[in-house]
Amino acid sequence: MGRIVMPTLEEDAAITAAAETDPDNPPLTDEDLARMRRGSPAAWANLRAAALLRDAIADLERGVGDDQRTEAGIVKLRAALAELEYDAAHAAE
Image (cartoon, rainbow, N blue to C red; front, top):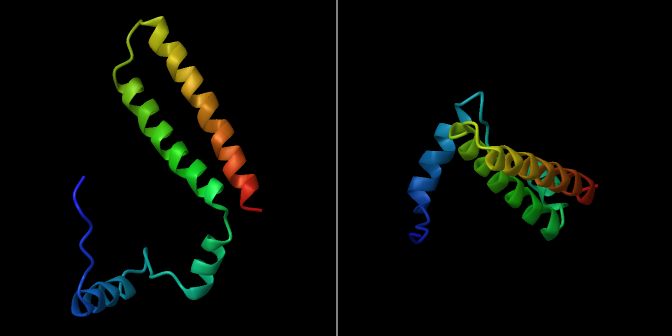
């Protein structure tokens, strides 16, 4: 995994200016950020795990044939995903 390179102040200003002109993806407000911070670290970990499970399910579905074990694996992953999403949604309350 590569290292993270933070933008310079000039690059950040250019990125923000471009974002402000995009009606579909406006920059987050202070209120948006405060609402996002309310979730517990466990809730954020669950959301990350749910994203990884969604990716695993999609990968399996692309390669699904008649293999019953693959189908069973997809069912188990979907159940785990549903549980994580439920936990994450209720932990943030």
